Image 1 (cartoon, rainbow, N blue to C red):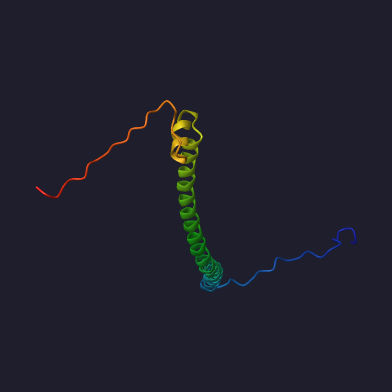
Image 2 (image 1 turned 180 degrees about the horizontal axis):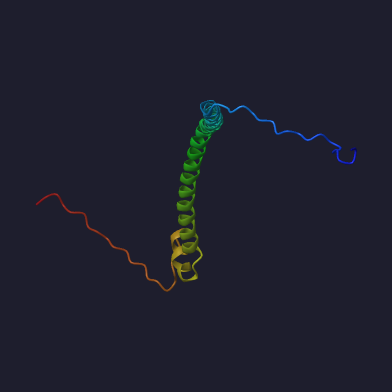
Length: 127
């Protein structure tokens, strides 16, 4: 008889009582509602952090724009000055205009040039 007996007693399948389908549906809806509310809360926290960061960066951005405008204005002024100085440099160091520049800077004239003096007679006031 020992040979015919199984070493382990056979287990009978345990039947679970049938659960109410409405109850499982409610649990499923609660899980979905909980998941959705957690997602919504996390998204609101992230959005709040992003808005706070933007609020802090906005004044900094405005200050940087003002500084940039000031630098652009200074660059324009400096470019005009550089252009004027380049033109002046080219005028004074042009070898073709050396004689005319020398006459501008001093009272000397070119020896090959004749001096013309115009005399104007004053008008008499008596007719």
